[in-house]
Image (cartoon, rainbow, N blue to C red):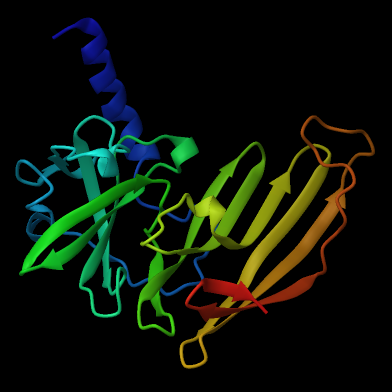
Length: 260
């Protein structure tokens, strides 16, 4: 094996257990009761038999993995031929009576792709068929919610950070129109700290009422102050302080979540 290839494998073994895969909620308490199930090897093998070209295997320090055949442009976000499944949520995501599965996992994505993606499968004639794989469609902590038509979308949350910011994202995922979750955000709590300023925001309450298809989100901003009168690089100088407590309300329609 070439020296560069050996070095790549060594770095992957060291870095991937730290950066890739499951949300571990380092600084945030999740507010949505997730319906995503952890995938075990037998369930993963049953779901992915038409997607993986070999058996799903556990790898120490990394988790479940399989080689894929990357069948066409709908799977072009796969890096190399490896997929690492971690969780699954079932529902009617492509139609009101469809039998679908969204498998959360990763394929060597980095921070710009939020370290992961989603594989969508549907059951046809008793067999799970892969429909697409998309990076930055993060479905590791979600619950299914039902639109008036009977089709389901996902209400999800995720954690991210960088450049002094810690983000708590609340967002929707419509699996018929997969998109980077940062394009479907409902609410973001953005906490920021630098030598010049401290901003602290929290998603205090996420209340979903399925009978009325109404979503209420309480956002608290306990701190929003400057420490120094001097400007810092990247530090917003003139942002207006948000209210201490804001309640944002949405109705779920067949076009998705719409603000009231």
